[in-house]
Image (cartoon, rainbow, N blue to C red; front, side):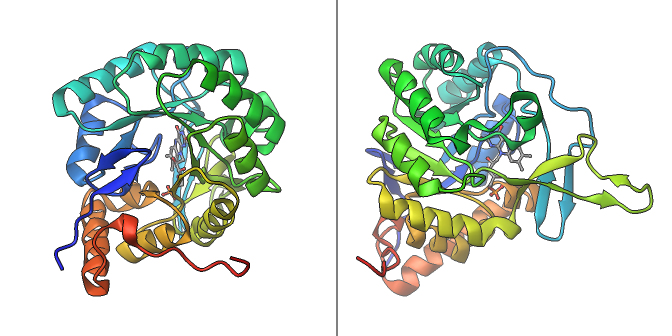
Length: 308
Ligand SMILES: Cc1cc2nc3c(=O)[nH]c(=O)nc-3n(C[C@H](O)[C@H](O)[C@H](O)COP(=O)(O)O)c2cc1C
């Protein structure tokens, strides 16, 4: 059977189930275009704040055996300049793009939403999970179901685009937070953001590898946790989920879909392996569909649930 990678999510059709997650490639027109050409069905902007942020001084990204440690500090050009790049990308390519928004309180998320409403993005993603800036802002929003619900509710009152709430693995009871986001009106969820933060040490220099000391963990090390959290959360919520965290192969993308995801983010694998990784993952999914005689990624059977 000739399999198609076309995947439906929130009523829209995407040419591949693969999503460029927020922040992996920055967010210029050129980098979004690179991601489209690499084979992502949907691309996400860097998380945008009301004002530009310089982020942390380097080194801010390091590799280790399990993936990447990063502490970019949410550097971004600000909502105005960011949306201009999104518009250029959208107008020149017609490819679907999701705008990621980042703030530390409800009024700022609301203001960002008003601005993003006029963009040609297909979805708004709320980055509620920022381990890298914990020192500056206290407990990450995504660790509190009350804060998550409050922000999602405020944004949903204004949003003209479907709202995707991006959740953090750094919460004690993620399914409860996923449920709170859904009850507050989120149209979809995405998970997981980086885990941790964690620490890597330069033994010769006897100091942390990253200048800000700690950083969020992503890549292969977090795959089993991401799969488990997507599986648990999709057992509790009705809204669809974009699953991400450590996916590096076609088989792992299929695992993410079986765990319950409708679309699959591939971030660190692209960062570590380059554009060819995306083509390989698409080919791996297609190969699986053809071997198993499944028409499209939407039709991949979900993992059985014990109490189902
Ligand atoms: C260098 C880097 C920058 C990131 N920037 C953002 C960001 O701006 N906003 C956000 O929501 N997530 C950000 N993330 C998290 C990713 O979007 C993704 O949730 C996480 O890396 C897990 O997926 P992966 O293991 O495939 O990379 C970033 C991750 C990395 C590695």
